[in-house]
Image (cartoon, rainbow, N blue to C red; front, side, top):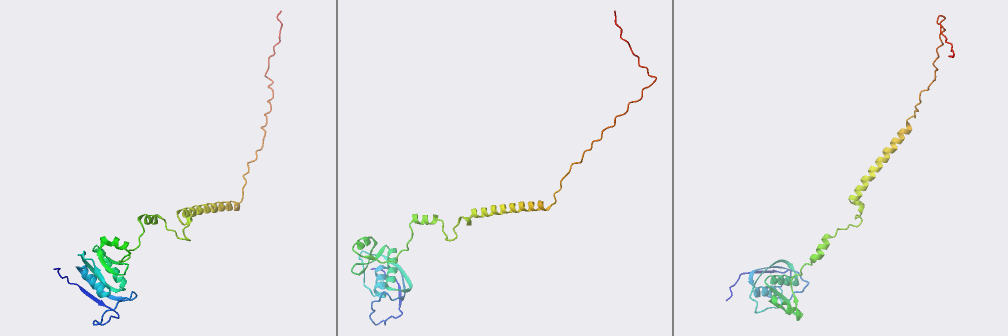
Length: 224
């Protein structure tokens, strides 16, 4: 005998019928508030409480299934969203919730999913978020972001260098122009070399002959 596992099921509906009345099938467009809590309960009991009791839909459980499942929701759900939540919880227990081509719901072992899909069945579970493959994610991360209207080469380091060089060149030209203007404003002085004048040295006059000075004279004789 299977031990009884306590669980609580609370269903609040905005327009719920009286308890004495037979529950009517709910439309897919209706959102209702559900509070369901199961902890390690037999999957047959959970499926009957969620699908059969809360949603008033028929569900079958494969006799080969002997597992427990934990399921807890709180909030407003449409019938389809609640089925997807239960189907996701079944996947955690290695089970699947499948709707056959005829529209019947069944809880099966996960190993039978391929067979049911081949027959036209549909897996009921929350849709997985779409994620890019590793190669696409790596290429997207490596790609530099482009901001239209601002992705210009002069906005980077090259633009800063050109701006610096332009400022240096402008400053040099301004300094050169200032020096030329100052030179033009100053008077031009021409250095003149001193004039050279020639003054001849006077020649001293010869001294008068001394009368007492006798200069001897010699005569030349032939030797014969």
